[in-house]
Length: 173
Image 1 (cartoon, rainbow, N blue to C red):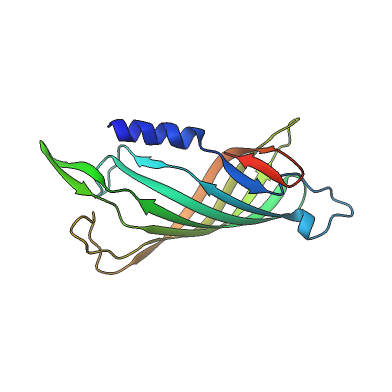
Image 2 (image 1 turned 120 degrees about the vertical axis):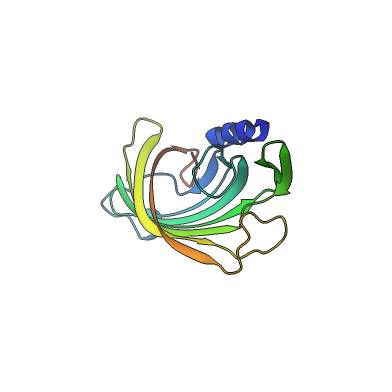
């Protein structure tokens, strides 16, 4: 439970560098000035769920995103994530714990992002479609053990904020 709380706090305060944080003006902007490359990371905790995975798994996502701003408020964004599992002691039945890890997970999606510039920062909402691949892993500590990779359709939606540090760099949460 303690690692779940720590991961939740880490996820809540994690910020990542985002390239080209400034909005492009509609006139005279080039393809390069409308393009953003973002590298993000954080922590993810599965504290309570109704899946086959036990509660308490912690993973660490590493994300790369490439966006093209259509306007100063609207962008198209492609994302690729590798979710790296952390091995940890998980209660598999009352009073019985085992060192386990969830499978490595790859996600890929296309999103529409709408931002609302407010003074020095830009809150945004995003939605998109993509897929999630759970990579095969039959190690004794894998939970669940997968003899072959499995891919499923995915839907993405969320919100965040972008704070520019300079004309080419910013923080994104």
